[in-house]
Amino acid sequence: MADFCAFLQDCVSFAIVPSNTADRWGAAEMVKSGERAKAEVLSAGRTRDWRKSMSDHVAYGLLVYTGLQIFVTIKALSEGSSTALPYLALIVLVAGIIPVCRWFEKRWADLDDVQAADRTYAPAFKRDVITLWAVAIGLPFALTLIFKMLLSIF
Image (cartoon, rainbow, N blue to C red; front, side, top):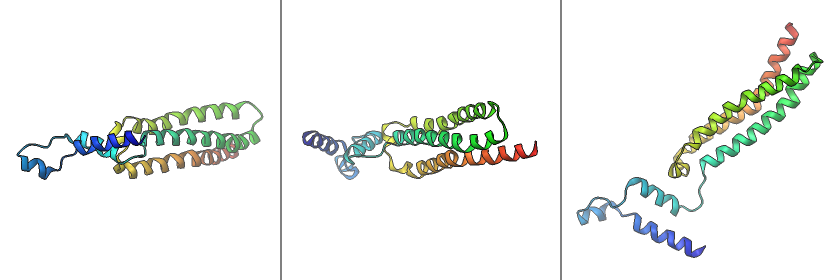
């Protein structure tokens, strides 16, 4: 492992040429910006992969959403009906949230390797994670209130 780290450091030291050195030689920069960013990512060590992190949040969010749907919404719906309607509603509501979660995941899955480790995406990632968890936790309670209001009206 130490040999591999030394190899990466050697690669990074050759890949990144300060612009003042390139100007002194009278040559253009030797490395494209994408390659430089990739070298910086490699030299930074362990970084957070936004793609994997979002995928993990989506998976856990779906589990929490489904659990809350089962225990909150079904309890409220079953009080007003003795048919299979609450269970059908559960299937529809869980199936309806999957495209929303997939949209969050797809936004981050399309990043390339350099972007996936770029720390400038942190604010957008935090915003998406907060939104995802607000939907996963808040929607079952909101739907329960809506269903209870509908059952009391009809």
